[in-house]
Amino acid sequence: MKISVILAHPNKESFNHAIAKASIEILHEKGHEVCFHDLYEEKFDPILPFNEIPKDVPLPSEIEKHCREITEAEGIIIIHPNWWGQPPAILKGWIDRVIRPGVAYEFLEGDKGEGVPIGILKVTSAIVFNTSNTENEREKKIFGDPLETIWKNCIFDLCGVNNFYRKMFNIIVVSSEEQRKEWLKEVRQTIIEYFHKD
Image (cartoon, rainbow, N blue to C red; front, side, top):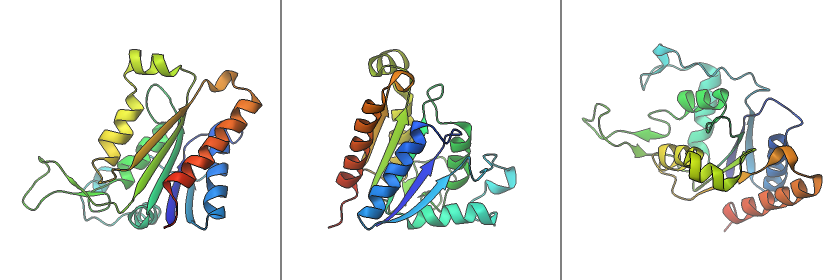
């Protein structure tokens, strides 16, 4: 399978980077083709210019590459911290510029954008790994778990990806090395489960 792995964390020593490394290793071990992007390392430009909004306009080569990879991907893994209940701005910009009409979704003929789009990604499964310093119960009770809503309902469901899994690892700031090792085992096992070869 062709799996797209997108990482958004500025600190190379972060647990997010460790998750990405473990993800890529197990994907290669299982014979998958990996398209990996560290958005901060690549200095991805998150700003969506006005002239890029229409569906069929020519795109910058970098954005065209990302769009092509997502179109071809059979699986997606997104890795990022929970910042104010949202992805980092660089990842939000990646969504704005790459998860676009004609790439990830389409509107019915005659629909000028007022209807519900049809997802066209051929992705069979999507996984989102998050890190946080907020307890799960507080995240759900006080904040309503906005990242679950964003990724599952607002993005992947809309783009036709029905097999979705998200895991929040917390509390990172006080986690031990042993705990992180266990979490990385969970990352590998999750990837094996969702991206097995038939």
